[in-house]
Picture 1 (spheres, one colour):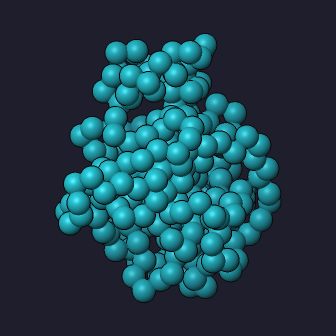
Picture 2: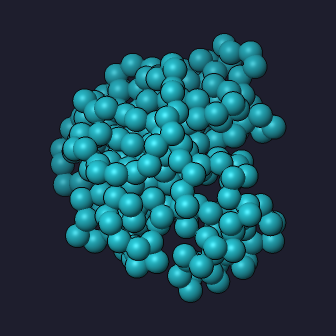
Length: 252
C-alpha cells in the first residue's frame, strides 16, 4: 500500500562506509536503545551441529529444508533459521523453540509484542543478523567467484552509478557493495525488491528520495562494511544517530 502523501514529498537517504570493522567475541544480552548489534556466524562452525539446529525448526521450516537439493544450501537454511531463534531467545530470555514469528509486509518476520526488530542475510558461508529497537535491514554478498555481465547493471543502477562502478578495476567488489545498499534499504522498509531498483540510491552522500519510492516517511542511513574477506555488506536504519557493534559468537 502506497503512502497517502504528496507526490513530491521527499526524504533523506544517506549512504556511506564504515572503513574498518572490528568483530568482538560476545554473547547477546540486553539491547541498548538506539544501538544496532550486528552478529556474524560462519556456517563451517556449525556443520557438526546441524542435526541439533534442525530440531529448533518448526514443522513448516523442516518441510521447506527438505526441498533443498544442494546440501550446503540446506545447511545454510537450517543454520540461519535456528541461529536467529537462538540469538533472539537470549535477548528475550525464552527458549529458542518457543519463539514464534509473525509475518508482515512482503513476508518480513517479526515477533509480536516485542521491542526487538531484526533482519537476516546470508551468502556463501556467512550469516549476518542485525538487531535493533527500530526497523533495520541488512544484506551480505559473497563476490569472489561471482560473474556479473555489464548489461545486467542497466536493470539495477542509474547511469551515474554505472559510471562510478566502471571507474573501478576490478569492479566486482564495488558492484556488490552498491547492490547490498539497495537490498538493505528495501529490506529495512519492508519493500521487497521493487520493479525499478534505479530509484533506490546507493552512491556515497545524501540523497533526496520521493517517499513513495520507499513507502516511508522516515529518513534513512545506509552504511557499508566488509563482513569478511570477499564479503560485501550493508546495514540500513532510520535516522543517523546510532551506535553499531559488530559481534561474532559461537552460540551453543
